[in-house]
Image (cartoon, rainbow, N blue to C red; front, side, top):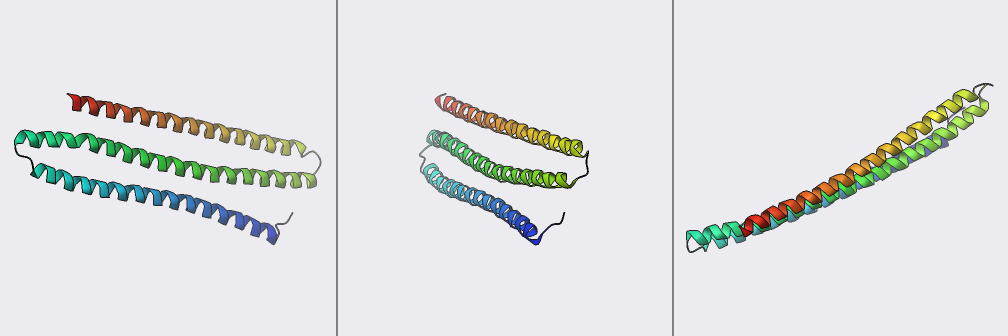
Length: 180
């Protein structure tokens, strides 16, 4: 069995398309991270200027301390929002890269099974057992890959729930501290 130039060209095209899909996903994530970070830096700078002006306008120590304490809650809220935005972008990028990987694995499996079928037609008598064993190993590998994907998705869901719970805990602690 020989590899034709068309097969090589098709494989190269598939590899380039996969590479471009990964690069696009990474660039989109990088762009989102940059926008989030730029917005956070701008907001932090503006807040520090406003806070400094307010502190300079304090008439006594008590007002100064009260102003400082009032700056904590908004800063915590903004830090939580920033962290959550970064987490969401990372999760989206991970999901997109996982889709690309799943497509590539699926294409590879289809190609391998097709090749195996072609080889088995020209194989000597009695090689059916070996071909069946290889197909069985491929099916087992695919099953393991699917199980790993399910576990990864569950871990992501658990991590997201933990992030949300931690966020609410921090918010609750900040509100309780403010009330005290």
